Amino acid sequence: MSVRGVLAVVGVECSKLSAQLKARIVLAACAAGPFAFAAAMRVQSSVPSDTLFGRAVNDSGFAVPLVVLGFAALWAFPVLTSVVGGDLFSSEDRYGTWSTVLTRSRSRAEVFAGKVLTALGFSSLAVTALAVSSVAAGVFVVGQQPLINLSGVLISPATALIHVTLAWACVLPPAFGFTALAVLLSVATRSSVAGVGLPVVAGLTMELYAMVDGPEAVRRVFITSAFGTWHGLLTEPRYYRPLIHGTTVSAAYFVVCLAIAYRVLQRRDIGA
Amino acid sequence: MHEKTVGLRAALLATTTVAMFGCGPSPITSVRIEAAIEATFANLVQLQVSMLGLPSPPASDFGVTASCRTLAGRNAGAGDWVCNLVWLGPDRQHLRDAYDLFVATDGCYTATVEGNSLGGPTLKTPDGRDVRNLLFTFEGCFDTSS
Image (cartoon, each protein chain N blue to C red):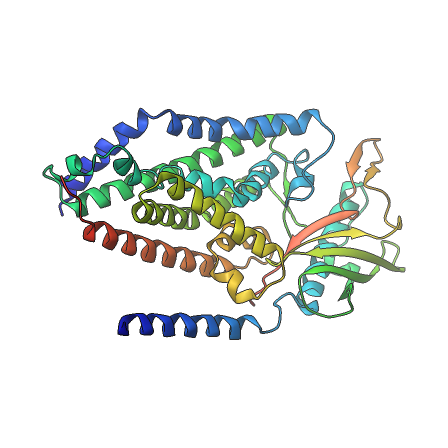
């Protein structure tokens, strides 16, 4: 496996991806969604009071990205992070193109690595787009007022911006974990419906479990719990233990899913 | 066949381990909730006092003490809680307020005051602006693992 080979696969996958309407629609929704949300909050009187920072959306622009972050954990992150990862491998099955891909000069390992890197790249791009757009929506539509954090302390706009950025950075590990899960399902089932749909269903199921007071150990091994670990960054004193734990769980999902997916792909008998 | 048995045993062992650890006490305890709400309430009182243009002493001067129980009377578990807060008001008199809490499994809670002792959802500042009453409903999070 060579770096050049992997990069060549990434290049091909990226050009295929950029021609897809689906990828463009997802990124456009990430960019426009937060503005629509912030504008809607300005014109109507009710606020999303069931989400953290929901009551503050009209008081501080920095509450907007945190509300979007809270909303997105429920189903948007699983969708955004599996929409490409869950389709990259199974689309070759759908179009019957595996034999064409694998008879080129790239090894299976290179094709696998290239496709996984493309999926991870798209996931981070989607999360970053949503983050940047929701911060911009908050700042431009609501303003740069100080923010009251989760310990009732008023934090300055500059500090709030740093905390919001860090909070969004905290969801990247579970986002990559979901992408790895989508890749695994896409490779194993050879179906894009399963590759994209099952991670979303799994995410929703895990979120529903977190709403009932079940055993804590089960909640902690669910990757969705890592989407909420940023709460500790917005309290005083801050706490990091859930963040460390969530990142570890995400890393375990990532490694295990990709390892199994790679094994399945290597062992698969792909005829001409 | 042998591989299958090993796999089955490993799965059983994993399930049992999770179940054993899982059936331990809930990490949502009255001690953690009380510590969290005392600090957050004191900070919010201080913030609200200064927002209303009054001289605000440090948050610790409000001497907030909380005692919290679940609606079912237990002292652990996510769900609905009631917290009784005793604190020193701006003119040093003892005040009592009760809050209804909903505590989620991740250690984040929403607290809403019972009755009108602290005013409605909005307040008027001395210069006539309507501001959100920070003490009417507030939220916070605490570490469930420390």
